[in-house]
Length: 255
Image 1 (cartoon, one colour):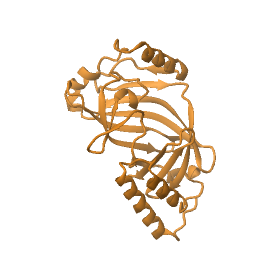
Image 2 (cartoon, one colour):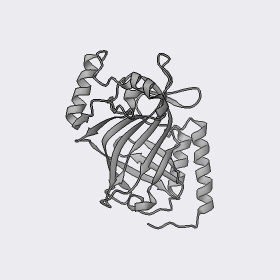
Image 3 (tube, one colour):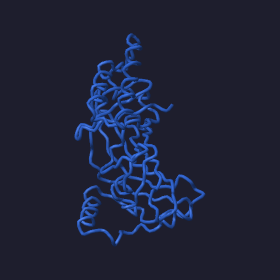
Image 4 (tube, helix red, strand yellow):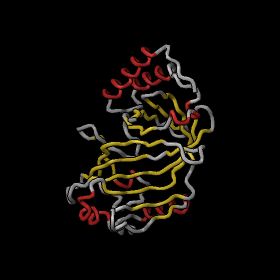
């Protein structure tokens, strides 16, 4: 890894321009002004071989562009609403429960084998269903990644965890999420797709909530592998693009 210091002022201006462009369009990385700002910043990337930068990539990265979960709806306050199923492979019931993503972040840390890093995607959410008490929770999609070139990571998911964010509302949490059997309200297409995904990815559910902390989990034994290109990396920002789908995400280092 080599980090130059020649164009510090240019990079600072380019990062400011990117943040302003994101703010003006609700974080949409498909916006032309955002695309241009990212391309300009990419040309100033100070980190060579970012995928192999080891501990320099380690951090808790906060997503500052729009989330990329399927079928999101942007609310008037700028946050994005999803169903619980959209956040975690339809593995947690009730899958149709409406929630808003309050914060999305990614803890990236080197694993003990020294070759792989964590690739978890953590969503802090609040329910917005008027038929239940407002609850705050956390969905953690667990994953791992490793470099396959100087700029590309190979990533895969290994499981997921649903847990309450506020333990003082455990009784309300259990009332809402305690029943994790397949919902009878699912259409035959939804049931077929759910069964197909479980078989294809080797998904194994814990099947029950931990009564002590309200946690529910599942594991994925045959998760598909995806590739992630690192477009930009420095001490402040990380910008990535999914090779298969082209999804661009902008994250800010938290510590």
